[in-house]
Length: 421
Image 1 (cartoon, rainbow, N blue to C red):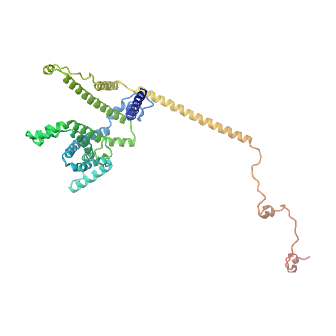
Image 2 (image 1 turned 90 degrees about the vertical axis):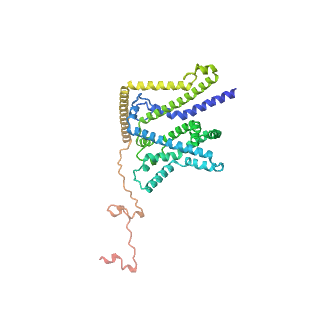
Image 3 (image 1 turned 180 degrees about the vertical axis):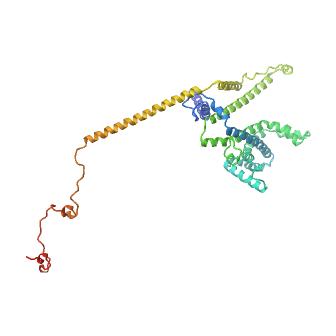
């Protein structure tokens, strides 16, 4: 029992750490969207403000980037899902011995770096544009076209993986039965296979749009005159950002939560309706008196969806009447007073330091002896005191006179012999 409790606590501790690591940055960034400093900062908290949302919707570059991202994402979804579905169908119809090779070729774009795909897309279509003799501003050189083509090159592989997983559960007997009953291949695909693949197609479309919306490596070489949101955000980060970016991140997180809760609530409601119909009587089904469960009954996702919607409405309503001007003015005044106090403390510290140094210098001068500090020249010059200047002056060091030595040759060259007695 103790081991089971310890294991349970360990699992909960791991989940808390995991979700804190996963969602912590998003929570912190969402908080910075409501803080008044001009640089994204969660602490210290200053004033509650909604001005960064207004600044976001007034930023033309961000709005233009969002619009371009939606255009590129829509085109990428259409092209990627179509290529992914074709690849998935081909994989199920191809000769079994070639499936491994074909699968490797289709998956290869995922393994290629996005930078390589972006450069190769730009070079290839520029060469095609020149071969066709088109102008430099033709649609083949358009940033919108190149970005969609470049992103679809590898996003189609993701779509194919999703569609293959669904297609493996398809019963080919349904297609054979439709053909035996006189349906054409197009009718079989449209009325039998396509409805079965619809959930997978929706999932692949969502995946393709999200992958296109956040792509940067490939888009940075192909966007041309159509910079997407990721390109604009990267340029803003390079030159300085504001909490308006945090406001955009908060809106994206909020929309994601709305979509996830709505989808979960819808799935849960369908399960409850199916269970109610399964337990209903024939009379209730025929008369239409079957009471289906409400949208909020036994549906926690629906309850959370309503709570999030009400909280959003409350925040929007508060933003329309709340003004942080007085709070921001008080914060600025507090900062000004703190700055002045710090300046005064710094000046006082410098004055105290100067006084201390002056006192130390005074003590050193009082303790020094009152003697002539001029150094006297040394008499010892080396070489037996030959080059001592005192030897060349009168009154210098007296040395005993020595008798002149006989220079030889009988004293003929003695100087004394040249003088008269």
